[in-house]
Length: 518
Image (cartoon, rainbow, N blue to C red):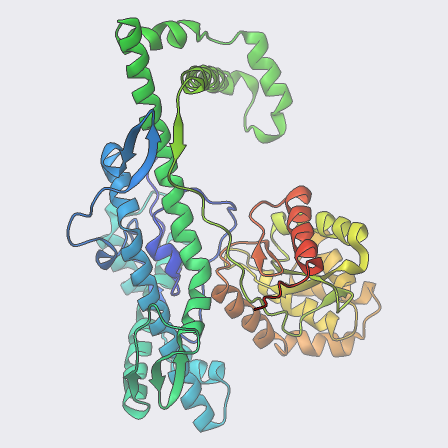
């Protein structure tokens, strides 16, 4: 398979810039948007962390665990992982700097918009978006030719579309930078205090006299810092597990007075056998819906997979036996999911407005995972009744061509009191979300078609959808569905995980506050 290098338009996605690529809890993503800031085009190469996020000098090793009295530090794990783990503080500092700059840019645009008597988004459209020109055919051809070795041999039309987006992004960045420089001259930016170790009310910067407080920056940093810390923890934990296993294996080999390779051979290699044809056929039959190709063409791949699964099982069993007699004390732990202030805005709500628990869902009507989540959300409302309320906000992904217009249509249906009925139709008919179909669904629900069509065709709710998307970016949403329960992000899209967060919220609501006395 040829390597594929994506050319995408990334808009101030701080976590993505700062976090190395690792595990992701969901796979449906869109480039982040934090309007009204400048888009940042990503060059046609694999993104690497910013230089400023890497320590300029070696740091002292960080203790990770104690194994049988021996402290294991980052010095004993994979050097690449060590570099990532030890760069965490620098990455957080860089994220803080970028978030502050984003907030400054936002206030600059808001100040100018207020002066002109228009909305910030209108100002952005007028001064930036409308001035971005389409690249010529010759410019696109030249870019593709100059970067041929970095672009996989794939669909030419898709490649050209990506290149057009990248080149437009470059132009938008340049226009935005020039505009912001002019605004800085009109609205002076004054540093007042430090961005760290400050109380929430401390003013750290003023923009044309308007303050930016430490609390504002800290709140926006919560999801970014969580993702940075989680990624660092996962990398360190994986590398640490390998190091612990190796040390225990060496100790066991020393105890038996045999080479460690001998233990691996007897406990693992000699026990791994090729699966039988019947086992391969059984696996194919049980997973046929997820396998592309007939049994005859994929049998070798299935056999290799099953053999590797067997090897991993034996490795885990050996590791478990070695660990059972060891004294292991972890010095690192998974970071806690932060509690954020998630606005319900004026979006569609179902349930008692005074409910102790508020569930806010950012959704995409063309996203299969979002459709799969709806029965779970329905179930928790049946279980908890008026103890919970559900708020639905929009987060259409760029990869879904019809999602944004579908979100506008749902808002138009909401204006006629039929949001949840209309949303249910969209989730059931995700393969038909073109404008004609969206209007047809309005008729099925008995909506006023003249009113609905006028709102949809005129883009009446485009700004509302965009507002939800901007808020989602602030809260760290980068995929859908994104669900928050009383401000805590749901990290596993299951009924059990959702109920656990709801129960936690209800318990907190029923716990009387602590009263301190003299």
